[in-house]
Amino acid sequence: MSNIFRPFDDKPIQFGCSCGKHNSQTECNQSLLLDERFAHVQNDSRSEHTTTDMIEAVAVKALFPHEPTRRAFLKSVGKGTALAAIASVLPLASLQEAAAIDVLKPEKKSVDIGFLPILCSTPLIMADPLGYYEEQGIKANLHKRAGWALVRDQMMNRELDATHFLAPMPLAISLGLGSAKQDMKVAAIQNTNGQALVMALKHANNRDPKNWKGFTFAIPFEHSIHNYLLRYFLAEHGLDPDKDVKLRLTTPPDMIANLKAGNIDGFFGPEPFNQRAVWDKAGYIHTLSRDIWLGHPCCSFGTSQAFINENPQTFLAMYRAIIKANVMANEPSIRKDLSKLLSPAKYLGQPELVLRQSIMGRFADGVGNVQDFPNRMGFDVMPWQSVAVWMLSQMKRWGYLKDNINYQDIANQVFMLTDAKKQMQEMGYTVKENEPQITVMGKAFDASRPDEYINSFAIGQKVSV
Image (cartoon, rainbow, N blue to C red; front, side, top):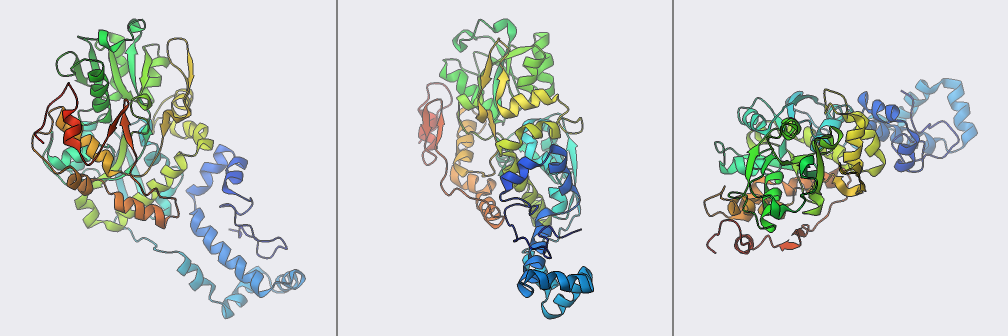
């Protein structure tokens, strides 16, 4: 492989991008077609080669600053001999090795990672074809699953090493809610926003939730942001979700079929199934989740504490690959390309146009309008603990969690905020220091006073303060 910095050329060394040919990474990305941009990284680690090439190039140009002399030397002895001669006076290999800071040595070279075929799993999936797992020295075997109960059970039985979780799931598992208790972790959030309330077309003229008493809605899992936001939304419109409507657990792929069959009146689901319902003329998008809580998390990357203890380097390898993919996924310039990357059957198995509308935010809503919300879906690594406390408050409000708990202790235990910040910083990414402000349907949440928050609502369980 040739040196991307061309040390024997008379041009100055460029540090602006990963290929060494452009002034910035943005310029580099824009110059590449999809196949070029996403294929090169499958074979080699760009970051490692960039580092070693840079050291080699700097050494050559430092020892031979006079361009004619450099070229004459190269012509007389050849590139290989020239580099060998330079290495005799300057330890290139040692410098290059030293530059590979904190190289991982994974205990397991092959890992089994679960995911559901929804856009929330984008970072975890795209890290595979882009070669990010390979960069970290592991082979990722991605296992597509239809429903969350199976993912939970296979994680607890150690059939999977790590997985795409709904963000509240590790909290519930760690508390023993709906399953045996097991120490499960949220290492990183995968996505923000990107969910929606979809209603059957027969209700196109019945948009006021106050009129929905007796309706049946599908949700993907009890401990999901979908369940919590739908309950919150209905309660704010005067409906008790435990008395006035029926909530039915349904896997995302089955939601559209049930909507078409008339078994449900609507569903609160993940992308791309909300947009697919429009595509299939089964329903219309009533409310985007961003309009209930702007910036809310949905899914996460997680594993068990036992796996981390037994395979710390393997865990870090997965962690870094997914963090890198997450940061990249949040770049607006690649969203269109992502729809192509994720479309194949082994990943999401959806039409590119459906994925593009979901991920780019310009979409048909099913009732004759084209809406444009670029932040319909986003990606953000940070597992903020205030978010975990909000989720725990909803478990209490709706009666899933009976016992009194120390909200902050559980959030600290399950959401690996400190680790996420550390890895982000070591990888050179900008890290926000302050917890986000949480506002749901206009009501602010104070993570230091969750019980008071719960008791402030007219509908829902009350707790003693």
